[in-house]
Length: 251
Figure 1 (cartoon, helix red, strand yellow):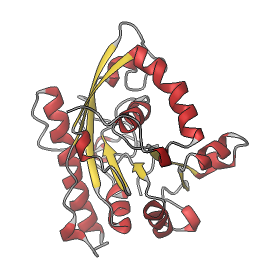
Figure 2 (cartoon, rainbow, N blue to C red):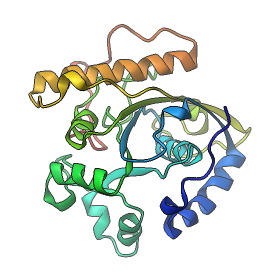
Figure 3 (cartoon, rainbow, N blue to C red):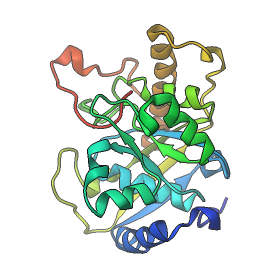
């Protein structure tokens, strides 16, 4: 099935057109993206997309995959970045959602307002449920955090799992430089929306943990398909291995 191509004209703002023109050509020269399951990415309306994460270049690769699947990619970004001259204006113009250091999305000052903004502006937002690069020694998804599930439930939008494999050859986990030669092949697979119906109206930690595990299992299954391997039965838990967790939105 052919990819739909560029996002709808209404989503192709000057900021995003400029970013696409700047980023996609060099990335295409360094890596060929093999994208499957793009039909699971909603063509209109809001959604939350949750991929695996093991390389610092993952967000760039996933952003291009979403763009090529016919939508504009957006991320949760640290609120402090929005205060940087020029750069902050670009983030705002690109529809990124600010996140306080506590990890809570704060459009308008509250997580619920962030969810309302997501729906009102029909945004597609990428949230990494692991919160940082996986600590799993074999690059499988580790234990997830509840931010992605909470955002999808609060906004009442689809939660799409995704997996990719191959970015580690372009930039290794914890690597500081890109390895552009030879040209890499990166596999990307989007899955069907996670069924969260039984968790609607439930915000207790036990329910959110169960919903998050359902999401992580779906991501691991997609990754297993890409790798041709069976995911481990148990998810790596950094807390039990004495590993500090830092980084992205975790809710």
